[in-house]
Every structure is written in C-alpha cells, then in structure tokens.
Length: 349
Ligand code: CP3
Image (cartoon, rainbow, N blue to C red; front, top):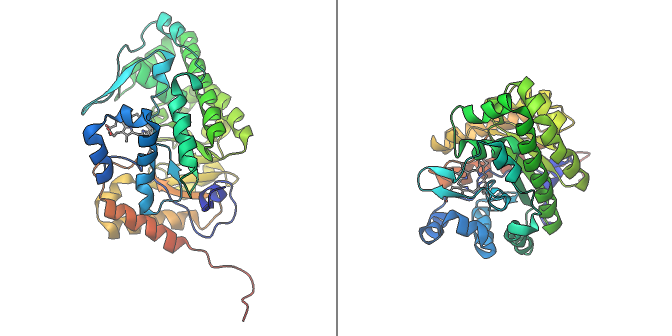
C-alpha cells in the first residue's frame, strides 16, 4: 500500500482528509525536465525504456499530485497487434496502414500483453519501488483506439470510423471485440505488475449518439470493465463530450466516471449516480489565465462536489503542452488547502 492512499480511498468513496488531485497527461511537454529528455529521445523511446518511463513518470510528482500515472501511450498495443505507427513531429500519431478492409481486421493479432508490451509491465515493477503515491495504469478504450486505426491519425469528424461502424457492423464488431480483448488482458497484466488503479481512456467517444454508443460500443467496454472490476482495484472510466452518455457509461462500468468541463460536476454526478465516484472537471485552458482565475474555477469544482465522498479532482481532459507549471502547482496546493476536512465529532480539551 502506498504511503499516501488518499486517491485510492476517494475512488472507493471512503472518507478522506482532503480531495486528492492528479492531472491527466501530467507528465509531458509543459515541464522543462520532460522537454530536456525529449531533445535526445523520441516519445516511443521514452515509453519503451523502463528506466526512462520511470524517470518521466516521477517528474510531475514534485508538484504535489496524489497519484502517478504510468508514462506510456494508449496506442502502444497497436504495434504488437500488427498495426505499426509513429509519432510524426507536429502531427501526432500516424498509423502506417490504416484499416479499410475486412482482411486487415482479420489479420490483427489478439496478443498476450507480455508479448510485445513487456516493457510496460517492467516500468510498473520499477515504479512500485519508488513511489509514495498510488500508480495508475491505463489503456485506450476500443472506440478511441479503433478511431486511430481506421482514420490513420487524429480526426475531426470520424467519417471513416463511423462508415465502417454503420456499413459493416459485423466487421466493426470483430474489430471492437479484438481491441476489447487485448485491452482486457493488458489491464490485467498492469494490475498483476502492481498498478494500484487503472483508467480506460475513451477520449473521443463523445462523437457518438447514445443509441450508437449503446449498440456499437457499450458491449465491448462492458466486456473489459465487468471483468477488470473483479480485481478490486479502482477503475476509472473516462471520456470527453459525454454529457448525454453518462448513464450508459455507468452501465458499461467503472468505479469512478470521468467528467469533462462541459458538464457541470453536480449535474454529471447526479446522472452518474452518487454510488459511483467522479473525476474531473476543470477546463484545462483555465490554467492559461493566471493562478487567481484558475483557483476561482477550481473552487467552483470543489463547491459542486460538496465534499461528498468519491470526488477525485482532475482536469476535464489532458493538460495542454504550453501550460504554465506555476499555475498547475498553485491549483494543486489550492485543492489540498481548500478541501481539507476538519476532524468531526466532539472536540477534546
Ligand atoms: O498522463 C500521463 O502523464 C501519461 C502519459 C500519456 C501519454 N499519452 C503520453 C504522451 C497518456 C495517459 C496518454 C494517453 C493518450 N494518448 C490519449 C488519451 C488521453 C487524451 O488526452 O485523450 C490519446 C488520445 C493518445 C494518443 C496520442 N499520443 C496523441 C493524439 C498524441 C499527440 C498529441 C500531441 O499533442 O502532439 C500523443 C503523443 C503523446 N503521448 C505525448 C505524450 C506526453 C506528446 C508529447 C511528446 O510528443 O513528447
């Protein structure tokens, strides 16, 4: 058990001395020490070298976060499955042969995560010896991974992805089923290696209507989460643009459901249900408008959570590359100070 288990307790909706805080993408380009390492190494080298992944994972912890997130990327499993890719400068991920034919889907391998992703589990094992806060493992969710595989990279309208889903529902189901099975195994392997919690990133699922989510995505997410939840570690189910999907996401599973900034936290939590935790929901761009404004917005999030058990403070989506580090630190400190709970009960003396 890590020394500071406030994050894990909050995920389980237990009483906590203060609201724990971490930020999605907390390791990355907004930090000078990360940019320094990146001068001589590619992103994939950092991910695939456990000693470097360890170093980068630890970098943001000096800002006072209550959890560490393993340094890796959601796309890593695609390579051993048979879909190679690279991170092109200024463009983001580029899949070398985007999927457009059924034969390509049939050729994708449902891998054992030790085969081809062993470096991730090795980084987790190294980290476990170094951390005093819990370690979050993660994977991409099938829809978000499928969107990269089919579009070949980032996308505005997800036309190719949705065409496959609408026109070839059987092929779509095979693709989603393969991705879901790999992700299920991968999350188990991360927990076996020592991850204290795991997060499923369905970053782009908000592109779907509730009906399409329910029919074409939910069963595959449920395949992963219903199984991984039996491990007893908190499972965070995250997406953006999900205002109309929250009830369905809850049904698909998760100890904690992510809320972006478009949904007011109190409304979102009501929809998720107070018997689940929530994570979020500060707009990442408020961190660009100075510490005072960022603190005011952070206060709004805390007020909306009403000190209820089960809130993990986070951004509504990943931290952006140019974010000022001082403002991040100011928000972390503010959340800790403002949310501190006085011990209840009769005062002694
Ligand atoms: O949170 C963390 O600190 C852990 C590390 C992490 C990375 N990627 C490293 C990374 C995590 C959790 C991810 C998840 C990820 N990767 C997601 C889901 C989260 C989200 O924000 O929605 C997605 C969609 C990806 C795919 C991906 N990786 C994209 C679209 C890009 C390019 C983005 C850009 O701004 O260029 C990446 C690259 C990537 N992965 C970086 C980092 C730190 C960029 C930094 C670099 O180039 O050094």
